[in-house]
Structures are given as C-alpha cells and as structure tokens.
Amino acid sequence: MQITARQIDDFKSDRKDIAPPLPVVLRLVPLLFYCSIAVAIILSSIFAIQFQLAVQKRDNHKTMTASLGTQTQDARNQRAALEAQIKKATDIQNWVAGSRPIQPLILAITRSMGPRSSIVDLRLDREPDNPAQIRMSLSMGTDSTKQLDLTVEKIAALNYRAFSPTQTLGRGELDYKATLVHQDPLFKQNEEAPR
Image 1 (cartoon, one colour):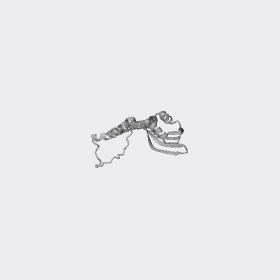
Image 2 (image 1 turned 180 degrees about the vertical axis):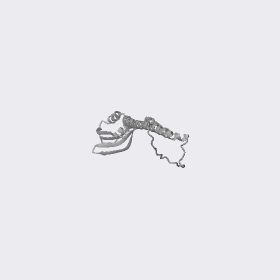
Image 3 (image 1 turned 45 degrees about the vertical axis):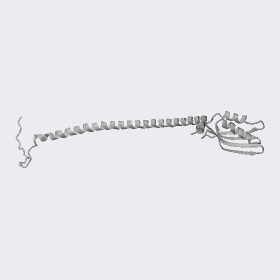
Image 4 (image 1 turned 120 degrees about the vertical axis):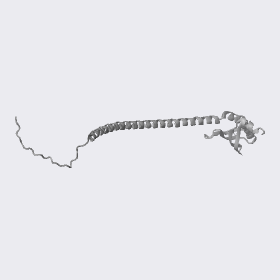
C-alpha cells in the first residue's frame, strides 16, 4: 500500500527570538511541586491526627478537673460536717465540764436550812454560752439573815464564788439571787499564797 503524496503546510514560524529549551535542573521543579503536595498532605493528616489527640486530651483534662472539683467540694463538705461535729462535741464537753456536780450544791443548800427555815423556791439556771456560771435564785421562809449567811458559807465551802449577790427581806421571806462560779481549789491556793 502506498501513501499518496500530499502537500503538508508547515505552520512553524522561523522566529529567532524563541527561548531555548529549559535546562535539565529545572525539570526537577514539577517533581518538587508534586513532592511538596504529597508532603503537605502528609503533614496535614499528621496535624489533623495530633489535633484530634489534643482535643481528646483537653476533654480528658476537663473531665478530670471537673471530677477533682467535685471531690474537692465533697472533701470540703465532709470537713465542714466534721468541724460541726467537733464543735458539737466541744460544746458538750464544755457543758459537762461546766456543770460541776449540782447535786452537792443543792444538798449543801438544803442541809444548811435551820429548824425554823424552809426553802420556798430554788432555781438554778445555766447559760448555754457559759455553762460554768450558775444563776441561783433562792427564796427562803425565814425572818433573819443568819440563815442566809449559813447557806452562803455552805456554798462557799463547795468552792463556789458568788458574784453580784442581791437579797431582799420581806413578809417572812428572804430572796437571794447571785451568779455562782466554781473555782478550782488549786487556783484559790495560788491566789492566797504570799508573793
């Protein structure tokens, strides 16, 4: 088979100002471009993975911080409850320590009554704030103050000291009011010792 001869027009111009072909080194530019795209994709995927890990760590730290906050609040609540119990126990201890045996005091008052004297009313009150102080209100059926002196001596023998005593005598009744404070006998001896 034979090809018929045809005339082919040559559209190529014979210009002399066309640049010569690129050197071989510059053929690496497209290769570097594609390599940089691949590296950018790899680095972007590493960044995305690290970002997700950082978000997970942040969320873990937030939950841990929240749980530690609740544990701290629970510990504070337990401490407050424990301090309240300690305060109650201390108040009870102070109350018991301040309530020196009142029975010997009442017994001393009743035994100090003479044959012509009687107790009409005896009231002993203690303050919750200061249980060591006893407010005494005594009404006696007597006509002389000697009975009161004897009763005060019996109270003093039990190491009670009377503060702001008041007495009123009228119609065969003697009213005596005072605040009694128990004194430690050792403190009393130190007070009386010469210096």
